Image 1 (cartoon, helix red, strand yellow):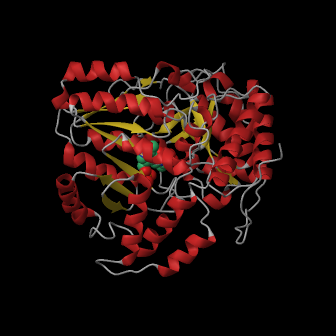
Image 2: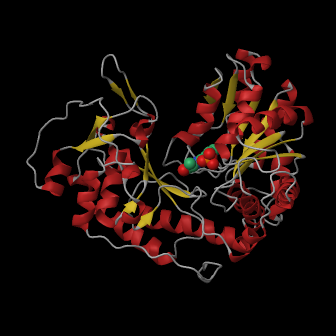
Image 3: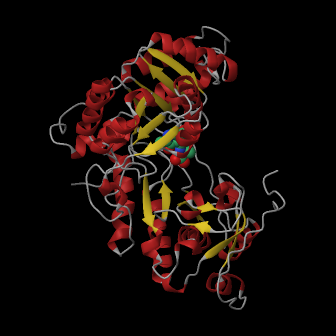
Length: 487
Ligand code: F0G
C-alpha cells in the first residue's frame, strides 16, 4: 500500500514563528506555566484544540463571498438549512454561533430542576449547561472506556444496562432526554458503534424518552463505523450518517469541528412545537432564526464544510494522521489511550510519570515539557481540569484519569509536522524520570484550568531555572487573582 497523502494542495500559508528553548522557558514562566495564557504566535505546533482551527477550502472561501447578510430570510440560511436537512435528516434546523449555544437553548427548554440527563460522557459545556438548569448530568461510559490501555473498537459506547438501571431508579418522567456524544471527546475521542446507538434508541423508545446526539465529530465517528463495525465496510458515508441520526430525535452540533468551519453550530429536531419554543429563546440571545448569531457568510462556510467533511479521501487521511502519531509514539513506549480515535491522541500522563502523585499534576508537567522541548501546545485533561479544591480545608482531590490531549486541527499540519511532534515527544519520554511535578499558586473557583497559575517542583525548576531543590510539595494555593495576562 502507498503512503496516504494529504488530499489537498496548499494555496495559502501562515508562517510559524520559530522560538528557542530559552525563549520558551521565559514565556512559560511568564504565563504561570499555563499554556492557555501563552500568545499563540509563541507556539510552533498548536494542538490545544481541533475546534474552530480547521483550514477552510477554496470552495468555502468562495462561498463566503456569496454570503448574504440580510437580517431575515437570507438565501445563505436556506442553503445551510437544506444541507443540514439532507445530511442529518432532521426537519427543524436552528443555527447557533457554536455548540454550547445550541446546548443552552436545548437544555433550558427541556430540563427542570431535579431532572437527569445521561450521556456516554458529557463534554464540560454540555454538563455545565445541564447543571445550570438544576438538572443532573450523568456519565455512563462502558467500563472498557475508562481503561486507557484497553483496546476496544468502540470505547465511546454507552453502558446500555446502566442506562436502563438509571431510568428505573429515577423514573422515565425525570429523564427529559438521553444524549450520546460522537465521538466521545472526554473519553479519548473514541467512537460509538451503530449497534450501541441502536440499543440506546430502543431503551429510549421503550420509555418514551427523546434521544439526542452531540454531533460535533459525526463524520469521524461514521468513518470509524465504516472501518471497524461489521457490515459497514462498503456502505457509503452519507448512508451511515443517515442511519446514525435516523435512530434519534435531534442533535446539537458545533460546526467548529466536523463542520470544517471557524465558527458555527446548530440545534436540530423533528418536533415542531419544541422548535418553536427554542426559536423564541434563540431570538432572545442569539439572533433571528435565519442567522442565529452567525453572519450569512459563516452559514455558507458551514454548508460547504459539512459536505467536504464526508469525502472519504479526506477522512482516510484524517484518521491516518491521528493513527500515525499514536502508533509512532506508542511504538517507543509512550502510554496512550488505545486505540487511536478520531481527532486526537491522548497520552496517559499518570503512566508516563509513574513517580508523580496525581496531586503533583503529571498532566500539567507533560504539557509544560512539550512546550519547553518543542513549542508544542497541548491540553491537560486530568486533575487540573477535573480535580477539585475544597475551599474550607484546602484539600485537593485528583481526577480519575490524568490525560494530555494532542488534538489535531483539520487540514492544517502536514506529515513532517507530525514527525517533528514524534521527535519532541521522544525527547521528553527519554528523560521522563528526571521530570518533576507542579502545584497551583492560583486557581479560580470554577473552570480553574483556563486561568490557573502553577509553580514547578524542584526537579523541573532545577532544569529550567537552575534553582535549587525545594524539597517536598506542600499545597500552595494563593487565592488572590494574579495580574491578568489576557487584557
Ligand atoms: N460537545 C463536544 C463533544 C465538544 O467537544 C465541544 C467543544 C462542545 C460540545 C462545545 O462546542 O466549543 O462549539 O461551544 N469542544 C472543544 C474542544 C472546545 O476543545 O474539545 P463549542
